[in-house]
Every structure is written in C-alpha cells, then in structure tokens.
Amino acid sequence: MEIFREFSFEAAHQLPAVHPHHKCGRLHGHSYRATVTIRGDVDPTKGWVTDFAEISVAFDPIRQQLDHHYLNEINGLENPTSENVARWIYDRLAESLPLAAVAVRETDHSGAIYRGPTDER
Image (cartoon, rainbow, N blue to C red; front, side, top):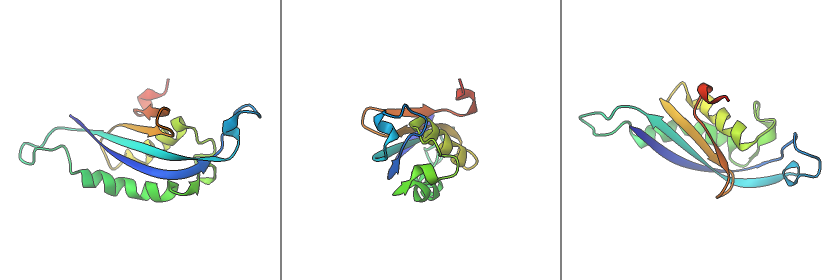
C-alpha cells in the first residue's frame, strides 16, 4: 500500500547551468508543492500504513529549510532544478520514512518524481 502527504513551500531560485538568455537563469520564485509517498503494509488493528502526522513531523524541518529561502544558497541545491529538489528532499527523509517517492511541482504543470537511488537513469 502507498499513502502520501502533500506540502507546500515558497522559495526563490535561479538555474545556473542554463543558456545565458534562458528565463530560468534569472532570479524568480515558485509556490512549490511536494508530495511524499511512503510504502508499507496496512496495520490490521489500526487500518493504516502510518499516521499522516508522522509524515508531517518528518517533513517539517525540511520545510523550514526551504520555505521563503533562496534555494541556491542551501547546501546540495546549488543547481535547484525540480529533479534536484526532489532528490534532496528524498535523501533527507529516507532514514525516517519508508519512502516510495518524492514529487516536487514548481508549477501546476511541471515537476519531477524521484523514487530513490534506483531512479538514477
């Protein structure tokens, strides 16, 4: 079974590796949405995989690092593409949650999904 919890944060960034005239090379911001999906067995007594609040507790320190910050200044996010932000979040949650995936949307129509080290293709 997989369950998920969605979170939002506001942040600014610019992409340093794009063509000099690319619009994403300029400083800009997004209303990001992150979806944390975990996998596990349904507890036969409780009827759930885990309490959604446990996902929130694990994500809260990450949100504090990202929300209303300039992502390029965060260690590991010097090139803060959606792909890199999804991987960065995944890496920080992997020890505390049985992750299936982390998805990051920077707009309603664009984002990335990272499913862990085997997703490195």
